[in-house]
Image 1 (cartoon, rainbow, N blue to C red):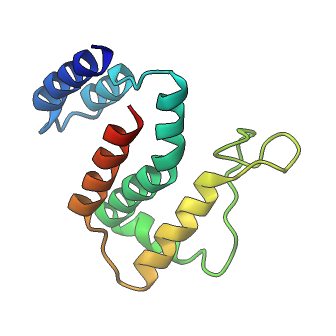
Image 2: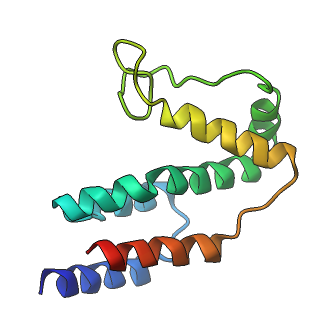
Length: 134
């Protein structure tokens, strides 16, 4: 029952905001999009979060030539997110996962190699993970 209600809510939101171009409205949509905070929901996010961030960053850096060149110019250096977040940054003690830095380096590598991301394939992978986890 919960899953079908969640799917209906998300389908409705996806149709409403699919072609949204206003950043504020898109941000508000993102804030309203909730995965269930159950153990399965957390496991789902943990299984796809790095992949999702790479896709988002790829879009960001391919749509802005200046940012793209700035990112490419960081090669071959390690990128560390300077927030104390223990997952996306290095944490308080430097032992965090630094996932944002790793994702930026992955995107940099994709750009340097002139590769593309198959977003249809990515979405299908995320959708499959969603159906398997929830």
